[in-house]
Length: 522
Image (cartoon, rainbow, N blue to C red):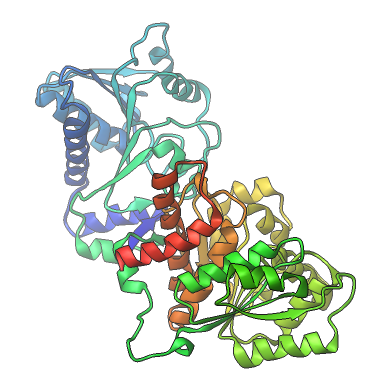
């Protein structure tokens, strides 16, 4: 697992390292050296005469930038250093780095931001080191600093941020006005939340986490707000599949999905569940879908009912549902393609009432979950009160905004803040976004796989099947199984993008590729 900290965690890591005897100056020199080595090896090998311009602030992030530029100068590269502000306002470490650079005879000037905005092409075809603000930045770039960021973004220079791009909030990735759009970000010790989620991630470019020698004790003492997976975690967390077993040992998943207009949703969810290891899958769906589903996925068991949308479920349908949920299933998926009707609402109501197994609610099921809860409790839905243990909600941003009675923009602008609130729910929530976030059990997982080619109808249906299959495969680590499902789903999309490009992926291919991901990395 890759741990991620917010700005408070990053500050504590620095403080704890210094308490253990590593001075701030040593950490600054190590950070500067790591960045300088990256620039030398990755960006200056082909063109050693290319100019490097460091734009540095008055805080310690600025000190990192000055030190990095000085090291590059001492290695013989063409370097210019601009430090923004007045020397009396510099931190002690930054003032010391200014003196070191001057004593090394590096070209250093103390300037105001407006002095860097000119009609000349000073920042064209150069390498720019962004060291104005660090991970503690909050708020917005204003005045001449905002103008400078927009000015720098006009040029095709290669931009390298030290720790985090200036203008990005280190704790939530928010960009209030603008930020410097970088090609690379060198961050230190551990990754930062602000560049793990959008929009901050979009400004960070490629993120390199540099080891600058934080003591193990300091790293272990920090409270990690969030984490993500890498490929090596798949083998560790993927449920074991013992040889001495049968299909019943690998879980029975009930998928309550599909309407006569949306048969495909139930197929995609069932296919993904089977491809992800489920032993048995039963689809509970309207009678009109039987022939199509028998042809599409003959491996699935079908339980059908008469679909009269404007009627509650009849006694025989309710009995079938009760037996499937209470006596057969190890996990339930409800919602994909279910439709919004009196009939579908009565089905969701019954499942919420009787289910005691893992229950994944998606798509139309989410809206119906809210409506059923509102009617039962005679109040607005409160996820911290109403989301029971064992229930997993998988909303995209619009669906989550409806569940929280917020606008889509309010949710999109504060995903990490909302995640921090929801992670203490009894159940779990999968916030589907460009960087999907999973919360529950007091934890927050930020997904680092997936791409825009996956933004297709049916992709979410596939995700529900993957999650359900993994959760029945390992009932002792439910949160990790949900997070792993999201990660595998995204990796499947990444592999398909390589094969088919950014436009041609189909949802059913994600289900097939998920099996390939498990084979490749487990």
